[in-house]
Length: 484
Image (cartoon, rainbow, N blue to C red):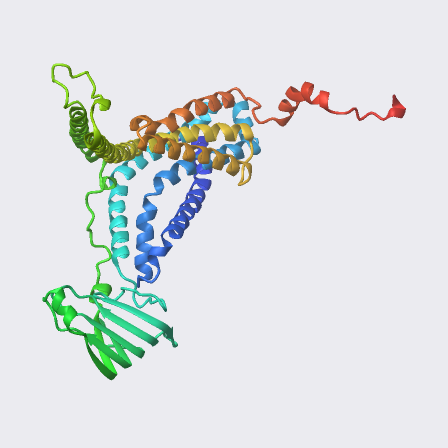
């Protein structure tokens, strides 16, 4: 059973917790909107589809939002305890700081475990939905989002250009050019018109376009060779009015949430990622072995060629080009240069493949380990936040927010920097995933020790007294001369 004090401490913690979580979640969603805004424009998406996509994308940021929320909420909670002298009253009643932190430590451990299961079982599914939805949106051509003066392939199977577009609903056109994309086995056709107009079609799956005063240029050489096409000119047909219907069913009826991507490692749970890592290790071992064999084979080929004029009994002797005359000498040099260039090109290509494999393996391992490491980050951030709050003794949204943001930025920058090093092969990916926690854990333990010993860590007067012998040498005496 929780005691009254425990319930009060937990209640004080969850007050700012839910508020901060909501604000941070909204900030991360706004960032996602800003990054993905270009993919939403001109796609004909409904508000419900956009909200659904943002929700899918937003679920994945919970793993970052929750640790920061715990850090900020713990600083604010213990800062309020100190500011209202409640922490001093608890200590006066014989209640230690560890006893005050105990109920919230239990709550944070529960939240950390929940984050693990959330990251392992729920986030992969939503990552899959979000990525497939983004892919399908990217494949969807904009609906009637034409730009004057530019060739655009928005209408399936056609390339169009309009010199001017105007009217209340952007339906009136001038300077119309329509080219049908045709293969070798189809007739080529281009339409040029002075004016045109979009007209509502009876069937919503078709776009109706009325053209005025123009020409239709078409050949009748489908399936015939290029020589036949060159012998005869295109046929030109003049028209006063021409009505064309364009099939846009693909544009309108495309399944936005159809799952076409299923093999991304971010769609997998921790156990499935273990299998992926094991398989990737075996594939990399075979790949690296093949690379070594290829490069060594080419290297030996070059050495054999450059040593071919010598007996196999003395393979260490080199060819003396001075003994070779005229064109034969140039030929040997030229062929040797070509072989070395081929070896260099092969080595560079293999290096690129090698780097790509290392980067992919590191990504998979880091993603897998962060399913656990972010849960541990929650506990470390609580230790730091609770200790800082009890030392600073300031609640509210002022100084605690600034300190929490600085700590989180340091953590986030370390994450990105170490991650990039691991991607380049400069660090073990397992160590890269855990190194930020390993760096912050001693800091959290040290801060907890300082809080338990009532250290005046942020007392400005203490630092002024410490630096007074130094500052005194550079400061002028303020005593007036007449009093000397």
